[in-house]
Length: 405
Image 1 (cartoon, rainbow, N blue to C red):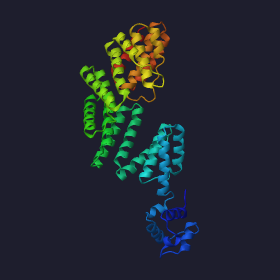
Image 2: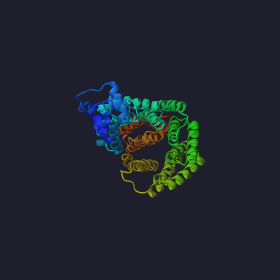
Image 3: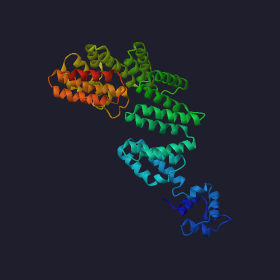
Image 4: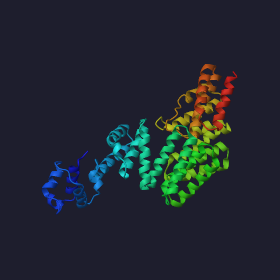
C-alpha cells in the first residue's frame, strides 16, 4: 500500500501542481518535499490545508489505501469477477483479501466486500458470510437500494440452495421489508428481482395462492415498465405449477405466453421448454408413454453439453420405456441422467429425483431386487427435504411396492 507521502505526490501531479504552488502561503516548498519523501510528518493543521489545496477529503490522505487505489482495485476485481473463470475467481480473492479488514465505508468498499463474499461462497470457502453482511451494512448506510437488495437476495438464495426453503423465504421477506421500510423508491429491476424470487420461493413451499398473485403482479409490472428479463423464468415456474395442479387451461395459457416470449426475446430454449413440459405431462400425469416417445423422437439431438435438456431427454425416455415394459432400455437411459449442481428449485429437483425410483422399479422387474432396494433408498433420501408433491408421493408409493416384495 502507498504511504501518505506517495499519495500526496500522486494527487499533486494529477492536478498538475508544482511543489511551490501546492505548498502555497502556509507551507514551504522544502517542507512539502520532506513530507512527500516520508521524511517528515505534517501537523493536522497542515494536513487539512493540503487536503483543501488538493480538493480531497482529509480522510483520503490518512487512509492506508486511498480512494484512487480502491477504485483501481475494484476495476481489476470486477474484471476477474465477470470472467466466470475459476482461476480468475481465486485471483480476485487474493487481490481483495489483504485489505478486507480495512474496508469499512464507501461504495468501492461495499462492492469489494460483496465480490469477495460471492466468490468465496462459490469456491466453498468459509469466510464469505462476514464479507456479505458488511457489504449489506455499507449499502444500507449509503442507501444504495439495488445493491442492498441484490445482497439480500443472495443471502436468501444461499439458504435456498441448501434446501432450507422455508428459511429462505423468511430471509427474503425480512430483507424486502427492511428495504421497503427504508426506501421511498425502488427501481424497476430491483422490484422485479424481489417479486420474482418471492414467487419462486412461495411456489417452492407450496404457498401457491400468494406465489401466483406475486407472479402475476410481477408480469403485469414487467409489461408496464417494458422490462422483460425475468419474464421467461416466471412463465416457466407457472407452467410447472399448472402441470402439478392438473390445470390444463392455465398450462395452455402459460405455454402460449412462453412461445410469445421466446419469439420476442429470441430465446429458443423458452420455446423448447413448452415441448419438454408437455412430454413430462404425458409421462407423469397422463401415462401416455407411446405419445411421449413419439414427441421425444421429434426433439433435436442433445449433447451432454446441453446439460438440462440432455438429462431431461434421458429421464423422460427412461420413464416412457418403463411404462411400456421395456425395462432394460429404460435403465440404460436412466443411468445417463445426472442431477446438476445448478438445480435448486424443488420442482426441478423432485422431477429428477424420481429417476432412482424408476430405475429401482426397472431393476425389480429384471429380477435384481438388491439393486432395486439400493436405488429406492437413494430416491427416498433425496426426497426427504422436498415439499410434498406428486413426485414425492410417487417415490413413497414405489418404496411401498418394493418393500412388499
